[in-house]
Image (cartoon, chains in turn cyan, orange, green, red):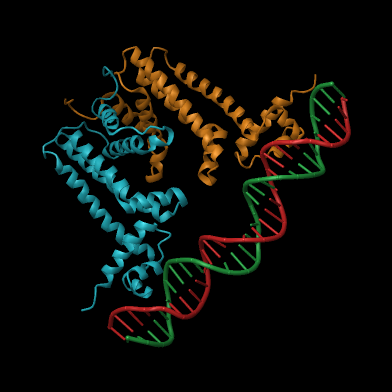
Length: 198
Length: 198
DNA sequence: ATACTGACTAATTTTCAATTCCGGTCATTT
DNA sequence: AAATGACCGGAATTGAAAATTAGTCAGTAT
């Protein structure tokens, strides 16, 4: 049996997408990196987008692992708010550390490639679903008040991204992890009111 | 005394910026609309940007009125959360109703004119400052817990914009005003936890 | 003299045809 | 049968010419 050309192609494409982004990755380049004829790529993947999606699938699995792993890191019986932070930390870390998504984010900002945006959207939706799932479980366990978990997880996610990255667009000093954690915890656990009114 | 050319120019420019946006508004066009020689504009405003800023100043005054007016609409001794909602309502209304900012927002999305972005930024900052001011007052009155009001007002503002407009980018059904109000109120007044833990 | 004008300038932006580039195919080679 | 890369046509890029526009200023009107 000859070498596994599909794996070769996937590896080459992963590297190229992460290094050059979606647009600047050409099928020619991938074939060169993989030392494979260009036509061969098309025996495994119908289009460039299909190749990209295969890589996105792999990244999603990695993300799932990172999220679960972060959740296990501290004692398994920690409070909900604690596990939410593990989750958010993993999310942010993944977003900024993962070469592919760092590059994709840059590409969206610089030239607005739709496929790159779609890739990021997909991963964000995945994170949201994961968060919602945790929220549902916490409500089930009675730790969290009954609420629309779709909207609530969306709010938490937006809040976190807002403080962790969008804040810097209008302020010079980025917030520290402590500031983010402190303010977010306050809002999530208690709200801002001193006394609850009806 | 001849006609007030400065007022004429301001009126013409306001109309043109609102109708065509920053970029497509030429000094020639403004002078035509105002029935004034192009040079005359430069007697009152050194540059196109200065003219734009004069109009932004006027809009800011209008915004201040809209915000204060919204605050007075309900009984003056309403609770803080109530007045926050009046505020947020006015903000959203202003954003979408004000011709100039609707056009400017479109221009930023379509062609990314920096001056248009700057204009929107400025108004957003103004809204944030207003919100922070209300928050400070509420803390002073003991209605709201001590907290970093810059960060907190930022969180509330982002949360509101997130639910009211960004939500639609990833979901087909926009949220109703009731949903937004209900979920935001829950988070702000009580947080999501059933029991507060230390 | 003063207020105003619009033709003019320098620089930027738009246009558009020539050229390059790239996703996908398929006749040929291994 | 599996793999290749020359080739195709449409899309993107380039660059230079043409058009547009912010800002000036010599001249006109009052």
